[in-house]
Image 1 (spheres, rainbow, N blue to C red):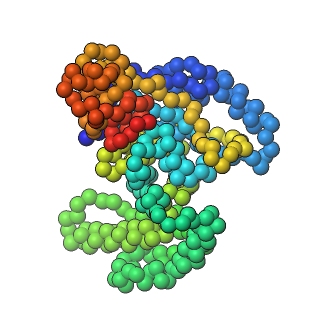
Image 2: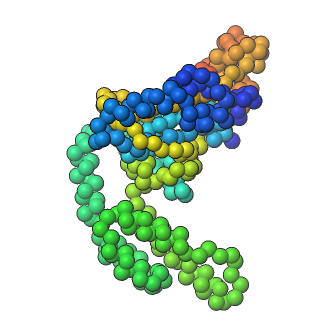
Length: 336
């Protein structure tokens, strides 16, 4: 069980445009109508050439088990999940290079171990592009279908195999597979032999389609946000599969915006608003806490203002971590 909320008070945050404080529940609405933000966007669009305009996504992200930690973010729809993963690690999570994954619509998109622990030479952008092209060239429909027993393929929906071979791009194929999967009826527990036969046929159809989809769909963090997200969609993120920190995200809206000229190392994600750091109180004297005893449970119940108060309590002063404005406060070796 993750650590509980550090405060029962109403969570508040600050708009990064007008610098006014709002309750969490009112921030989304405020950002829609913030005059300072509207002015910035209008000025940006008026002065920019058409070729620099693009779609931007407005995303709310919060701690799943401690939602008093939250941010409103904006990023280009064409950015991939790795950009968002890197940002979340940098601002809220990174401590020991743990793995992570997004779950969107029941599909997991994961960081690969070599992304963080590869000891060989770095792969250049050009080499990565060549590898991706070779991967696409190797995708052979006939060879792919031969990996399944003939009796399974016979159970696929009518005209599926002929339709399957028409697609020129992987994206079209993935969309078709998902639509076909969604069209398979999902009924309750069968009773008669006829219902069992139909149930068995639907089951194998789904299994084969899922397996084909898993083979051809990009489930890495290289996939762009616009390919996997729709307005209003909720999704989740997990950092560290041992002492996990879980986040809930939602795509609130999109707008037309302008790409800004930035250095390569600069973040392409803008923070629209962020929570004010929750106050933890020292369990010994009641003053605002500066440290917590590292652990995964009830960090707010083991918070201290100073090492003097830690010694009075009898807790281990060597296990202290700083109080930070993050849902990972007090977990693993996270120091902010």
